[in-house]
Each structure stands twice: as structure tokens, then as C-alpha cells.
Length: 359
Image (cartoon, rainbow, N blue to C red):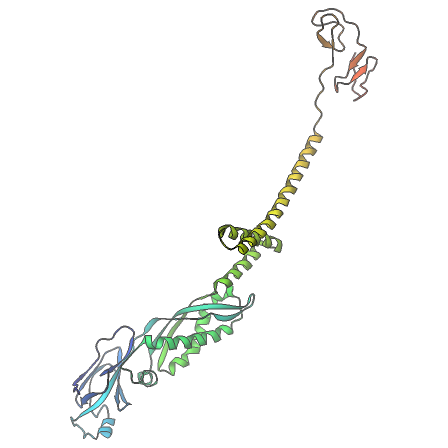
């Protein structure tokens, strides 16, 4: 067994919390050996599995003055130099930040609007060793080395258990849960404080990164938001039908059942839209017909007759032909200049429209 005159651990690996010296078994020390403890370390001196003393930063000489129990345990006279077996456990006192936690399985949450839903949560936390001797005896045991990876799973399970209890006391909707993440995080940190302290640890900070619903719950939330935005159930039903038709078009190569559902919804929506367009067309046609009925009738062409001399068309009431200049006999009938109706020559007003007939 090697005899150690200098005891130190200068090189800590990332995530390392504890390192035993020597790493396996016990070491041979003697009074007068030098113990060097770094600023970010504490050293616990063990003999036969019993913690004898705790050393802070600095250079220490192993003696019965700073470890009085050695005199009793070893029977060494004061100032003696006889070798003895022991172990020194170096404990890192630095902060371990950005440690991650998360729910491996969805957590059940009672939503005030949607009922029982499942959520996932994750975040980060920071810790440090508060009581080195307690941490070594309660958690590390006889391990030669101990890192955050070896305690991470245990702490994560403890965190999820407390977080789930805190979440069960929250009475709100998923939509409002995000803005309460700080409040939920603080409550969880306070609840975990005693659990960490019993292991010799201190929980420095605790953050909730996100609380998210699974995909199917998110769809329900989106649909509910869509209904609220559209205002009424009839519009929302048409909105769902349009979505189904769109999804069916996107998944044209999918299953027949899904396609049939999309087509059925599409037909229903198409019929509703067709009915609306048909009603609009009929109303427009009726309005156009009404406008045409209100328009004034077209002016009738002036009444004419044939000249008996040159066969030219002359006004019905002409006494001379404007083409050949010869006198023409008086007409036995006259045509109304307003509506074109033929009237007897003796009529002074049109028998059809009442318009005055000129001589």
C-alpha cells in the first residue's frame, strides 16, 4: 500500500461532484501528511467508514490537533508519525447550472374549459452541495467518484412528483397556464427545498421552460379558438367541412374512409354554397327584370302611306307627295305617331294610347 505524504485533487472533470482519495480502497497516511483543498472544494476525512473531520480551502497538516479522534482510534501518542489507513473524499462546492428536468410521460391536468387533458413540461434547475459530509454519507456512500449524471435521474423523478402535485392545485385553463409558469416554478422550488436539504444539497434556482399539450389536445384548442373567432355554430360547421375537404385533397392517395369523409363534408358545404349562389342569381335576375319593366316603351316609327302616282312612301297625313309634287287624295285612315296604331281618318285621338292625332 502506497504511503501518501501529499493529498490533493487538482483536476475536477465536468459534472463531477465527489472524488475519493485514493479512488479505490484506503490509503496509507501518517501524521504530518499534507492535505491541499482548493477554493471550490471541501474535504471529508474518513477512517473505517466514519467521518472524522471536514476541511475547508487551504493547506492542512494531518495531526492529532486537527483530527483529535485519531489519538483515540489509532492509539498514536501525541506527535507520533506512525502510518495509518484512511480515505479523503473531495467534494465540489461549485454551482451545477443548466441541469435539465422534464416529464417522460404526459401529466394529467384538469382544464377549466376542456376537462381532463395531458400535458408535458420541461425546464432547468441549478443546485450545489450545502452539507458535504451529509451528502457523502447519505448519497455517495463508498463510491470512488460521483457525478451529476448519477443523481440526475433520481432528482428528475423527485422534481416531477412535486411539480405534478403543484400543477394539480392550479385551477385555470391551458391557455392561461403559460403566464403562470413563474408562479408554478417558484411553488415547486419551495416544495423541493426540504427534499434537497435532507440529501445535503441546496436548490439554487428552478425554471419552467414550457408546458405544452400533446398534438391531439393542441388540435382541440385550435378548433375551439376557431369557433370563437367565427362566432356561431353554423359558420363553424361550414369551417370544419371546408377543413375536411382541404385535408381530403391533400391526402388524395390516403384511405378510402378518410377520402369519403372529406368528400361528404365537401358535398355538404358545396350544396350550401351553391344554394347561396343560386339565390343570389335569382335575386339579381328579378331585379334586372324589374328595371326593364320600369323603362319607357320605345318610340313608334312615324306612320306612312304610298303615293298613288310615284309609289314613294309619304307621311300618312300628307296632301302632296314630296317626291313627285302631285296632290294625293286624303287618307281614309291615319296612324298614331306615338304608338303606330292605325285609326280611322275621322279620329282625333288614338284609340290605343289616346295620343292626339294631327290633321
